Image (cartoon, rainbow, N blue to C red; front, side, top):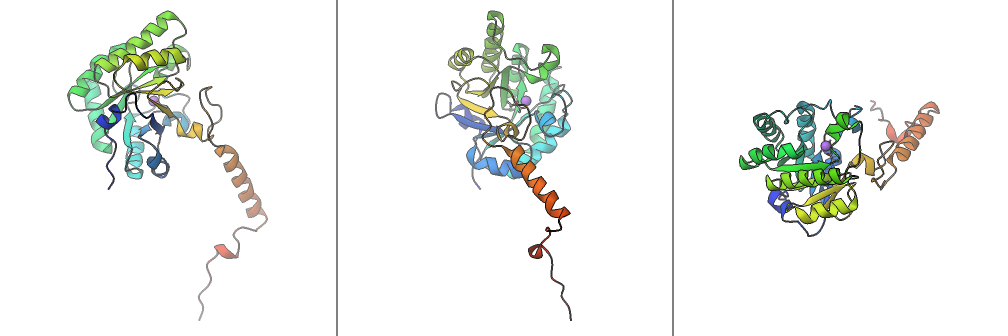
Length: 268
Ligand code: KIV
Ligand code: NA
């Protein structure tokens, strides 16, 4: 079987060919993405994208593990990283270690990602030193949506810029092997990328990062309203609507199932 990307092979891409990353939540989609991606993230965005939650606050460790196992079954080349959900890692570094170890043991994935305010440097170091590869996540941190009053781009004031840069420095110094940078102005993304030794993976952070990630359902046009930074590379909503309409009409007109779709009776 093909060798998967590893934390060191991802880290070695700093300043090189951009890392291609997407989210994945299920096995068949992971199988379609895997040949084209360096990294598949089982993002806690699955709470909103798959489960219809208003934000990621209600996502549980059990949900992450269930979807993580499916994505591992569907992929063989990409590194699979799994988001630590809200409430599973913030209380203490010991809590973070126990839950991250469980996620890796029960899914077979190679890394976890956690939304990393400056405070999280301590936790990232604790995990990394004990054999848990960690990806940091700075800038717009969706798990802070309640405190922030929604999903807000970061770095519009000098104080905010300094704080996001500190978050990235903290994750880097603590041993994160990659850092997701979300929802920041291009010049701040550039400054972070030039400052940290780990590759930066941008989402809403310009092409000046060491790689890019998007929520797959957003870039496929499966979700409704999407953030400004998303390009829809397909319009799966329109395709799906057309297909379902055609199916409904065919059923009502009794033109489906047709002769090709029925089993012949064996007689005599
Ligand atoms: O949950 C998620 O999908 C993410 C990325 C989009 C970075 O954290
Ligand atoms: Na996430």
